[in-house]
Image (cartoon, rainbow, N blue to C red; front, side, top):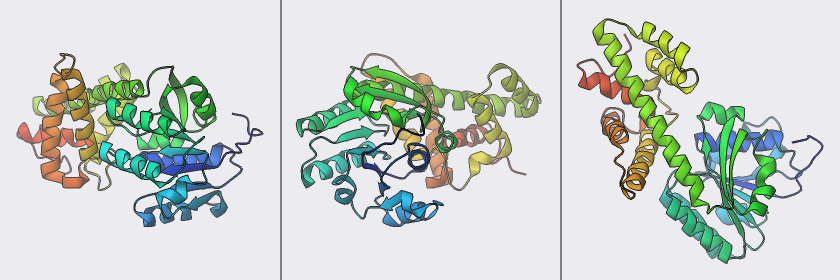
Amino acid sequence: MSQQQQIQHQVSWIGLGNMGRGMARNICAKANLTHPLLIFNRTVSRAQEFAASFENPSSVQVAENVVAAVKPADIVFTSLGDDASVVAIYDEILAAGPVTGKLFIETSTILPEITNEIAEKVLAAGAEFIASPVFGAPAMADAGSLVVVVAGAASSIDKASPFFTGVIGRSVIDLRGHAPGKALLLKLTGNSFILSMVETLAEGHAWAEKSGLGSDLLHKFIENMMPGPFVAYSNRMMSGDYLREDPLFAVDLARKDAGHAIKLAESVGVDMKITKVADEHLKTVKEVRGERGDLPAIYGAVRKESGLDFSNRK
């Protein structure tokens, strides 16, 4: 998007998890807004801390509640952790007053049918709605290099497009004309691949250690044959970063996505065996690490069941 092109709309961002913070920051930095970005988080102190981290404090403004974030806005992004939170936020928004003419851009990872139900309510209230889940890790959100999936009315996607390529993302998978839930079906299918990848890496590294091959040699194979996410997750396992105190893909969110994928696949007669194995290992992660559990800590769970310590730190 050209830096000369200004966005005249008032834009709001609701939800400041690991991914939401990166996307909101890039909208402030790159979207050339004429108004401060309004931000809201259920823990208001988190929004205040986020706002204080900006070099230009006038570029962002904290809203004390959902109504204050939505009422003056023309475009509202929502980015929340689970289905119940998304439903609750939209119910509160729609109960608070008129939303006619507003565009809602929903980026959370939730079930397709719930996305479609929310879309119907929003459209019935005279507003616009598109689903826009993203693929990528928090570091990619920070860098503005996410892959964005969009579904909904073509005119609404066109209105939202200045925020995608070159702002929060590096590319867009455009499902215009499809029901918003279609984007979530792709997102959850894709996330099952991530779960499977982490499970495969965890088993491979545990095998390499116990067989005497060694993780370093296995990692060289991964670097040469499967660059990208495979290498990134392999590095996190080898370095012990899967034991970090602030998870990048928290265990409860990972299990939520696994459960959604398993349910959706079973509804059409497909048994997601690898996803189920990953989910069983995530149960162990939760038992050992609690809320600090991170997706690549599946490696710790595999190590534990293989007779190794959960931690690979010496």
